[in-house]
Length: 476
Ligand SMILES: *Cc1c(COP(=O)(O)O)cnc(C)c1O
Image (cartoon, rainbow, N blue to C red):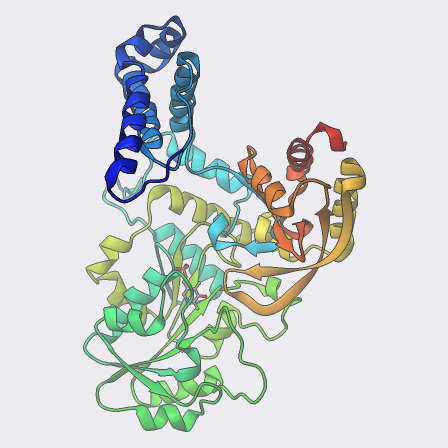
């Protein structure tokens, strides 16, 4: 093939070759009339098959015109087959099930918390028909969308008031908009965090119409720093969970109780963005010092905001609990309408909170995964490795809670590492991602690891089948 030389005869020659090739492209109508095309038309309709063929030809035309390419025009059955693949691909849902073998329990890219079977059933039940979303069945009058959730949150946390919105970022935006608009919010420099996905505390404060006042230093913020920053414009003292990072060593943070006292002495509110929000002590074995929602409230915090789909193990949501005087302004803020939860999420959240109320939170996948012992993880790895034969090895591994929960605290786990001569770890990972359901592992030190921390026993058969298919029959 001629290089695409600049100007002169070289270009003319390339153009002549391309033109000759383009003349060889079949007409759309000829492809539509082929016997092989008729079943496609029956399945997808004439206009859709026609559009798919047009797309296949357009791509081919572009490839033929690319001077660097050296391709030939495929025969007509091959072109029809390409269109068929195109149409079949368009029918695949973009959102697919994934088996999480990363060892990160709350993986934001993989949808964070999986739901318990009975939570999913509650969602399916509400999804199929009408429901009393904003209808009081006792009186027949209009009802509150979140009354049931609020009652559960009050009972579970001991807070006098509660509210639920779309996610914790929305909860913080609503809290600061309703409580600090036009005023100042005091935050420690050590807590000006970016959670990922562009959620930065300074930006949220600004969006909420408040002014950020930074106090202390990255590693040390004392009560006196907060006190010195209070002015007549101050509305809120804000405490933010450091979530996805940890400053180790020479550090000092002001205790919540002292912050709450200071806020109340000055008629201010203490708002706590707890991030992950452990309702119970599930997180404590992994990290004894972790503050739970109840701990924060007991320390005197006016509003605690936390995610529903992190350690809590429910659907994506942002939960707000605290004093009535602090929650009520949010209830009447116009933003609430834009941040409200939909019925499917409400169904999932209520079913999740009911499991907590019944002391059955062990039925939720996230608390259950957090509580697994290393021995059961090793047994799971042995089960998988035994079915995969010589390509598999069992290794000790470190998993993580993830989602900004318990940063820096690894969870002892076991992984199955795969080694198939002739297939690179990257190739193997790509094949597993292409499988249905997709399997996502992690590559470390040039080998592919399947971490058992995030594998449910109900995933095992599919996981083994996916690996067998990915490595091919020769290996087994
Ligand atoms: C995760 C997190 C958020 C954001 O919560 P979403 O529910 O993802 O919106 C906010 N603040 C902290 C401290 C977090 O850890």
